Length: 157
Image 1 (tube, rainbow, N blue to C red):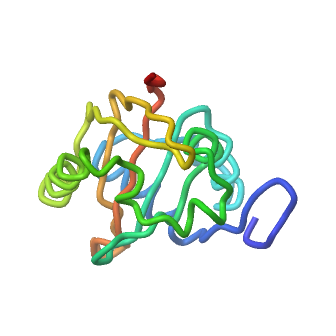
Image 2 (cartoon, rainbow, N blue to C red):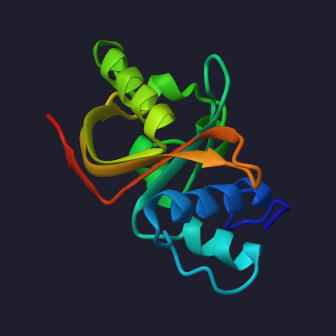
């Protein structure tokens, strides 16, 4: 899956390992079945029936991963998603609340049961509920970014 295919976008397997390892570190459980090699795990994560998104650390973080459910929910292609500043997933009026939540994650490693309104590429609003957000760290526990997962959302009128 590291190359272009008709089914799956190219993925950074090292990033996905950090993402999955970090989830297990903070939550003390696995996000997905970790059997098989990283290509098999990346396929399993991409096809999961719940949303998984992430961004790398920077002054204005850019999304670097969204599984199939995330791409569908945000109504974007892989290329659109992975060039979008993370802050643009929330409406301007909700960005301060989103930034506050991300600061909490930075300090505590993760938060569970997050709730917030997000916006798709076409302007469709949805309420995310019971999300888990965590710091993505490398093998030396250096912070590389943040990720989130959720399986509950409600489309808003």
